[in-house]
Structure formats: structure tokens, C-alpha cells
Image 1: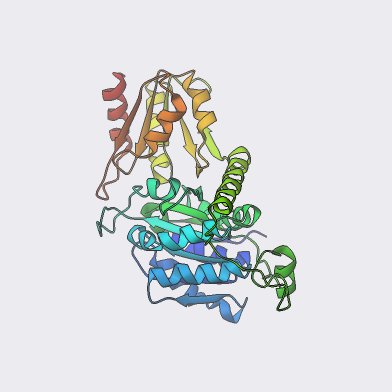
Image 2: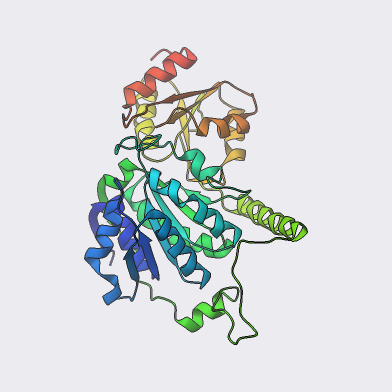
Length: 361
């Protein structure tokens, strides 16, 4: 029998982490994601599943605790919001360079700087372009529902371990704070130490004996070997790009114009599309679920049939760069966005379509 509960997106993250059988969570409070840590503290999984939950002294400490846990092959995670994730960037880069699986949750707030505690999508660049130093990528999942907040915990962990690379759930503050019904995943047992060693032979605990220890590091002083490492990373990213693109299409079969939007904004745009179609204007939408790898091929395909593309984002225009690269000038691509925590309504989206493409509703 399905277990259905009403909860916030942040709470769903916490419940799903326990049910996945996660080994550890290391975090630090920051609005609007503090409920992740608060819910874990309330549920006390260390008494039921043995999961470690620790509030670190800072975001920098939290991500380095994740680094240590991941190096031993454990399923570990952290969560934060935009300024906090900025502080974690060095550690995230170390995780990527050490080829360590980990899950990072970013519930975005407005910036730059301390900005506002209101929702935003302005960490798109930070998440999809690497954020920290070096040539690396994160697998980036963008939930639009509380259900997806729960579902993407297991998916994020699975992809991270499959490709030995960090994965990020990039949610805007709306999805983190809103409440919806959620079907929680079944409880999974945490892996035993022997299972960890068998599944993660690369880990620091993967082999026994003084002469057979794995060394986990992101440091390589030999330039030729460092280039070999980077080429290996790029092969992994190419494999992820080939196999893990996820997206949803809405009303695209006969669309004359296309909206591209992710997260909670895609839900607003869907209502605008329904209103537009009621007025006889054929609008469709593609919602990227993986912001990296980005659904470039799919957007390029749809660009061949439409007269124009509008990206709708809670930022000044970030995803539009990837959309323009996908479209390659085939049709006009415009952006509509709000900032400062102001969330657009469907009528504003329709007004933007009317302004950018001279559509009459």
C-alpha cells in the first residue's frame, strides 16, 4: 500500500534520504532550506537506520565532511541555499576531481550577495557551468514538484554512484517551501561495510592491509597524468550526456511557439499555455529535468517546427544561453524573467509572448 503524506519539498528531501538508506547528512542552516536539517533532526534516523546527521560549524566544514564520507564509499549528502553553496564550491570541485559520488541539494534564493530569502533560479550558472574551479560538471536535477523532490534523492544518489561524480538537486525556494501530497519511497536498508567494499573498490576502505590502501585525492603534480585525469573526466561527462538527458514535453506536437522553463516556473508556464490555447494560440513547452546534461538535441528538434522560443526563468537570463546554443539561430530566442523573489503569474508570461513575438490573444 502506498504511503501518501502532505509535506514541504524540503521535508520530502529528508524523508527520502532516510528511506534511500543514506549513510550521512552534513549541513548547516540557511533559509529557505533549513527544514531539511530540521526534519532529519526531528526524525532521528541514527536511532532507526543508523544514518549520521550532523550540523557542521559552517558550510565549508559540511562539504568537507561529505568529501570524507564519500571517500569511504558511503552515501552521503548535504543541503544548503545559494550563498551557502557558494561556500561549498571548493569542496564540490574536490569531489568531482576525486571522482567521488555525493548528493548536494541547493534550494535557491535570490542574490547576488546575501540577497533575499525569497525564491530564485539564479544559481543556474553556478550549478551547470561547474561553479568551482576546473573543467568539471555536476549532474543537475531540477524538480518541479514535491514528489520530484523525494524521487530525485534516490535518482541523484544512483546517478552519482553509477558515474562516480557528484549530483545536485537544484530546486527553487518555491518547490522547497510549498506543500503537496507525496508518495514516499519504500525503506531501503543501509549497505553493510562488506557491501560498501564490494560495490566501491576504489574507496579508502575498499581494500584491506597496509600495502593495499586506496589513496583518494584530487592532487596530481605530474602535468601529463593530470591531463589524463581530465580526459577521463571528459569521457565520463560524454557518457552521461549520451545516456542521462531527462525532460518533459507539453503540447509540442502542433506548437507554433515554444516555452522552455524549469522548476516551479514550468508549472506557471503550463497554465499560461492552457490559456493561450483556449484563445487559439498554439504554444508548447519543454521542461528540462536535467539542467546538466541539458536537452540540447531535443530543443534543436523542436526549434525546426516553431516560429520562436521563449525562456522563462526567475533570473536575468541564464538558461537562455544554453537554449540559444541549441537553437543555433534557427528561430528567435527571447527571455522573460523576474528577480528579487518576485514570481510571475501566467498573465505576465502571456504578455511576454505577445511583446516578444507580436502574438495577439
